[in-house]
Image (cartoon, rainbow, N blue to C red; front, side):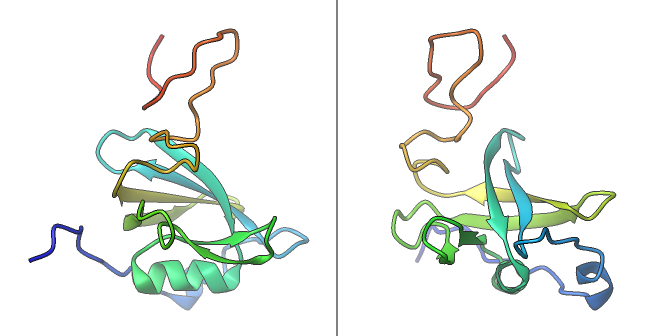
Length: 132
């Protein structure tokens, strides 16, 4: 029996997809947030294909700007993100995914969150950012 979180696809509705505004490169910013703690884990980019894949598969799938390829979070690291809900902002130019994070965390550095460096401080937080 697996301890992996359940995959829960999100309904793909054409009327929702029509409201997403991709930039001139065909990308939209996607913020990923922990569903329980609400810690912001990372920001990545999606195109129309990876947005649809993410919703249909119930896992985050991004477009790697540096490698110019589809990147399913956790396929290499094991640090998968299981989508619990998906949102788009009032302008349709930013997405928000609430996820159950599996493994060590979201950041390729080994931190739970990519947001571990704080302005005005030499301290690097290894885990979740929080109040001062």
